[in-house]
Length: 366
Image (tube, rainbow, N blue to C red; front, side):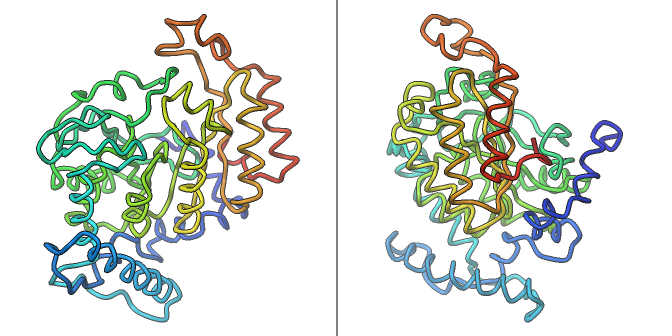
């Protein structure tokens, strides 16, 4: 059915530049390469999971380097993929570190410090449990991702005044509680139904990192793992994710810190998110989403496109024109008058013209 509604999802793979920029992802789809999370199960952690956190992070750094070398060797056909270790694996170490973060929560850069293992609520209003609001084969994502096995988690670490998913992002009780094993079964079912990737979104997946990483122990399919997020992750979270996720689908909303603080309630937006974009670009293939907003071409769109062209020349960028005044903006139009309307054709054309001028690759995903 999706082939009828989204013929571009087939056509996009005839574009040589798209294939080049998503080469490893395409190879996983074709079962020619292994998804990174499966490779993490093949690497042994010989230490003690009950050890000091600093020691665990030291071991993690060494095993991350080993994982990169192993993946390069397997990808290059110099080595065969090994069987998963029967003892403690690199993935088990990551799961333990995610639990440690949950005890003094700093999955996101708000670093609220709640002990969510004791059901203290973080800024995201979540305790230790994760909730899935919905999960389905999504045919509305970027063409190379369709059909996408999309899993929507409740809650978020942002407070965007224009949120279009506020029924999920602002409601920590949306959906049903899900365990790591149940999440794995859900991911496996989506893959069997034809998903090209497992797409963790929300709300935002960041507050649910522990559940997502924990579920990978129970997943077995060679399927692309995709992180679809505002990317306001702590550096510790990024290190855990880096060796597990093949494709990144991050938002890049604002070209400065002031807009991030006023419209999403987060500090140091640009420095944090640009840092994490560079990390993702180093560790995997990236499709950036930039939502063009009215009256924010000069302060946000152009600086972002300039930064991307200089720092991430081989990524893809979805320049999105779907902005509409929702959530608080709809109720408080005077307060947010700059974004209290839709984006105009002229503004979108400015964005496209700038992308063309800079050589940003966007047409097959926008």
